[in-house]
Image (tube, rainbow, N blue to C red; front, side):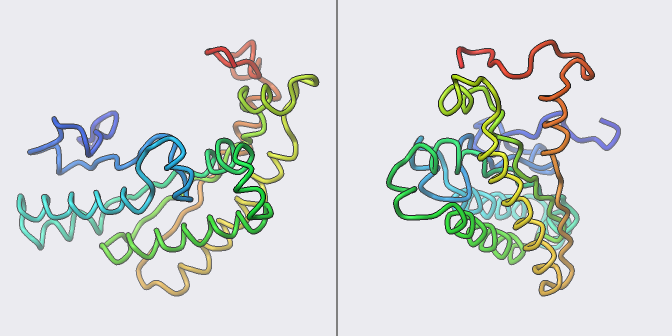
Length: 218
């Protein structure tokens, strides 16, 4: 609020998003999408490349509103955030037998890293200089995953959590490599795994009584 920013970023596709709202940023996210296009297609949401296309449209609107020079400055000084990947595994790889038949876990992870690489290249070419990438959570502790894959034991699916940890390592390695090759680009990796794992394992410490059961039937 002190910075003059909205509490929540407005959705770019919101019909009410226009005028002065363009100046304080937007969300181009599409819930349940992922790094892989097939993940988005599973639930008929926008894949990552279409989200970038919407950002390009936003840039054009910004230029029309404030001019090229100021629009370039706004974009170059903006913080871009990317948080995705959980559904690539939770509703794609571990649900869709075709995906598992075509890829080993590591091959699928590498496919997602390739998609992340293309995303970074695309937003960099559009003027992004500051990018925060949020890693995967311990998605094996999601109530939905416990119900689907570990109901009898009613504990986190450790195999899935290991996949999350190894994928996060790949993200960090990629971020370091890309920073070396893209002048002026700063990438920050934000770890949420450890904090969320601690909440799951020690909910009382954070004011929760239950951390393994979902609120909506899972």
